[in-house]
Amino acid sequence: MKFFLTTILVTVFFGGIFAQQKTVTSVKKMVVIPAGMYEPFFITKANKPLRVASFKMDETAVTNAEFLEFTKQNPKWRRSKVNRLFADSNYLRHWQSDTVIGIAHKNIYNSPVVNVSWFAAQAYCKWKGKRLPTVAEWEFAGNGKPLNSKYKSLTDFILEWYRKPNPPVLPNIKSTYKNQYNLFDMHGLVWEWTFNFNSFISKGDSRGSTADEQKAFCAAGSLDVKDRTDYAGFLRFSYRGSLKGNYCIANLGFRCAKDLK
Image (tube, rainbow, N blue to C red):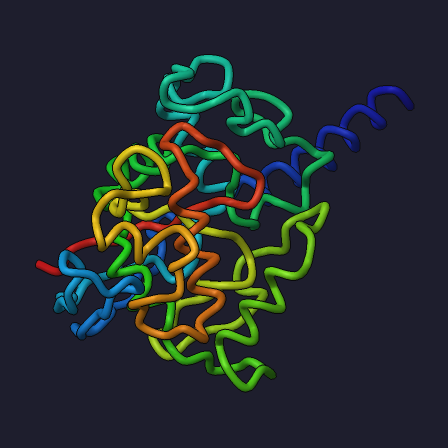
């Protein structure tokens, strides 16, 4: 009888934990980003100010719990089955198994999913009837004014975040700040994939042969940029330029966007 009661209690305890942690909101809240002008970070002949049409964007990054539901319904994107052309060996390495995040990682169910490739992020967004935001959309929305930050400028906040090592356990979403567009954690929690993350590519190596490439790279990296004091921008665009689509990195996640009808 004692064994029977203990078994029930353990089942209820663990079952309650997993039931709570696996609860996923069926429809993730999206906010409307108004139309506006985006000035590319690098000002070159090819990079001219462009108008960003109004669009929708997830208010937060996609969480581990949300991505877990994706892997359950899309077996080819499980850790043991994914094609290595589309995700390297680090893919979802922080989970216990293919479809189990694990009780040892109980605090990250509501944290941004990381160790996901561009291809996996794309597939998730498509599964949700959405897409990844473009660089122009992400930068336009991401540079919105913080509403609840102690820092005098967004750049100061971002640079302070860049100085810190990755925490052992990623904080939950909505743990940093909300900006003027009602987007949470655009900076300060994880880096995020964009649809055209590698849209500026030099020919050969960083020693490009054209004037535009020489200004955007090499020792002339600070020439012809929108704002030479935007050190955070330099780091962000440099980071994007170093990525490949199948990379899975411990501080790189994503959020989805959607066109307005």
